Structures are given as structure tokens and as C-alpha cells.
Amino acid sequence: MPTDRVPAADLKDLFGQVSHEIRIRILTELWGADEQTLSFSTLRERVDVRDPGNFNYHLGSLTPELLRRDKDGYTLTYAGRQVVGAAVAGSYTDATELDVGPVDAGACPSCGGSVETVYEDGDVVMDCGDCGDLIASLPAPPIVIAAHDSDALPKVVSDHFQTQSARLTRGFCKLCDGPVSATPTVATDGEAVTNPPELDVTFTCETCGDITHLNVGVVALHFPELRAFLHENGVNIRDHYLWELDFLLKPNVSVSGDPFRMELVVTVGDEVLALTVDESLALVEYERR
Ligand SMILES: [Zn+2]
Ligand SMILES: [Zn+2]
Image 1: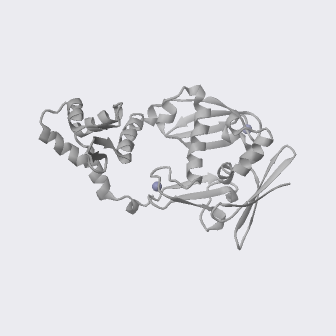
Image 2: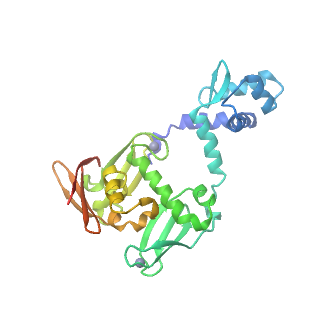
Image 3: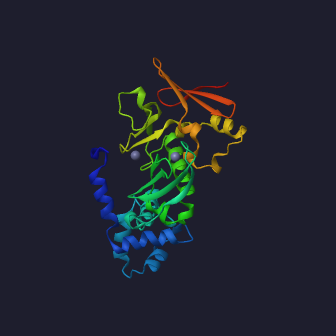
């Protein structure tokens, strides 16, 4: 990630704003309150600060970025809620302490053997216990792992990954919510991380520069045309782990240039759907065959 996209001055200001116990208590009191907005006196009473001048000073340093002030009192801004949410997620940050797996995670798309899942250094890694194939390696924050039973790990990881990929394919960065652009790697001279390289899609955040690679089948999964096709053919994607959908993860792909077009042919039983996308991964055509 290019560090010049992260405004150091803003980051310093933000950390400065919350680097005081009273300010942290103000944020957590507002977060935990039944009311969305608290008046100056109620908030001061709950945070338990005697000196109104001192309290006002701390409130002022959180406004307007983290707190909004109006005639009724103080409300957390979106950024204020994000700061508290990050602190909650941060209480689970010690990924190395999490000892999870191996957990059974369904059938191997290559040999039908059983897939085993472990959580290592912030990634969920799935291997086939029989043929040894690496099925997937997916990043997942520790809270996703720590907040669920280990038996539920494959389902939770699959759902989390689908949520993240849906967000990216709708155009929102998974870190900062800034706009992202999608490019199939074969449409550029970029280096693919998937095999075959035709299946690699690169998402780049125009705001923070974060880069994510997804399999094109995972991107296509969010087209309603494909979901309808799967539904009609008895495939409810909620009943499957993502890595079990081999017709998606290993689709028949062909690429042509000028204008760039990529065709994915998805087959379920005897039924066939061909989807054609352009260089921005927008669906330009679909056809039942
Ligand atoms: Zn296998
Ligand atoms: Zn971003």
C-alpha cells in the first residue's frame, strides 16, 4: 500500500484526539448509552468529571471529527463509531494466540477428499488432507475467528469472505470505504496471483491504495443473473462453502481483445450459463445455452 496515500498528519491528529482517558470515556459512554445524543450535563455526570471547563475542553478536542454537537447535545459521528468499533476488534488482535484447527471443511473440489482448515497468522488456510492441494488461503481478522466456536469456522470464514467480496464488487474498499476499481489482470500487464491467470481480478482502492485479488468466479457470484441461474438449478450458495463451488472457482474462461471481453461459462448438471464482462468487470451479456 503506498504510504503517501495515508495522510500522516491526519493520523497523528486522530490518535492525539483519543489519547486521553477522559476522551476515551466520553466516546465509550456515548457508544454504550441507550440515547443517541447526550446533553453536556448528562454526559459530564456519566463520565464523572467535576470541572465543567476541563470537560468542555476535552469535548472540544473530539469535535467535529468524532463528535457532533447540536442544540440537544453530543452524538458520535460515523468516524467516532468507527474508532470505538476498531477498539472492540482490536481487543482480539492477538492472532498468534488463537489456536484453531484443523477443522473439517467439506469436500475437496479436486479429489473429493476432506478439506482441513487451520488459522495461522491472520489467514485461514485450507488444505486437502488426501491429495494435499491448497484449496484456499483467505485473510480473516482475529475477531471473526475468536468470536465463534471452532466447529463453525469454515462457515463463518466462507460467509465473511463472501461479504468482503460483495463489498468490493459493489465498489467499496474493505478498509476505508473509498471507491475501488476492478481490473482483470489479463486486461493489463499486471502479475496474476491465481492459477490460471485469467481468473485473477485486482481491486485497487483509489483512496487508500489497498489492493485485493479475487478469483473472477467469486466476483461473478454477485451478479443476480448468475445467482438466479444457480437457484433455478437447485444450488443455494448459502448451503455451500465457497471453495466447494468448483463450477465457479474453475469456470471455463476465454478472453478476447479490443474491446476487451472475458467470457465465463458456468455449468451445473446439463445447464449452461455464459457470462461476458468488460475490462471493468461489468456484465455486458449473458446467455443460457
Ligand atoms: Zn484433494
Ligand atoms: Zn481504501
